[in-house]
Length: 77
Image 1 (cartoon, rainbow, N blue to C red):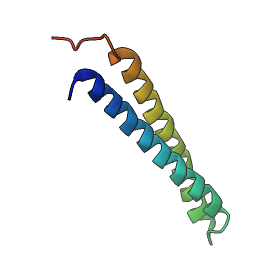
Image 2 (image 1 turned 60 degrees about the vertical axis):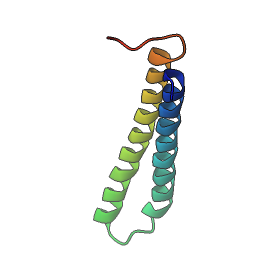
Image 3 (image 1 turned 135 degrees about the vertical axis):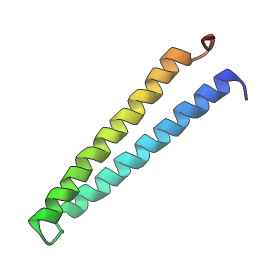
């Protein structure tokens, strides 16, 4: 696997993880109002926020790697 392919693969994996985190947040949002207690709703809402943040972080990391180590860049020695 060459450098460019590794960068593309890493970017793809981070985007896939971001999509997964976003999907989990969306599903939890739909369930929050159905939970039986206020405490469980609060915990689910915290997890929704954490999942959205995780999705943003994965996308940001993918973008930074792409910008920093994309084609025509070499690894530091």
